Image (tube, rainbow, N blue to C red):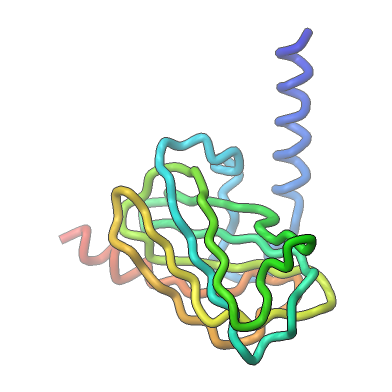
Length: 159
């Protein structure tokens, strides 16, 4: 009975997260990795610009990965009660996820009305080099926004 209840909860979570429309062409959150049951730990440091709002109460999610389809998805990394993503600050997160090769893309998702201006996202993994993605632009609402440099990695790896 307990296993059936847990399975139902997991199924509901997958349905609710995969039903969100992702308007950014070429980017899709990989539903198979939503549980982040991988064996690697990543440290993510997000620096908020001094030009941002004082602090945001918006919902912020993060997704990053490699050219081989390995994706780490971190929903709701925000915490308005602790003033996460305050102007001129850096917030650090420990995220478990599937192991990746060289991380070549990172996307942020923002939902809310406050707005938010990140300066950069730095990702450190145990099996990969540290990588930094510069933003310095307001993250639009309800759209995945970021950079994808994977085509260069895939071409280099194929040789």
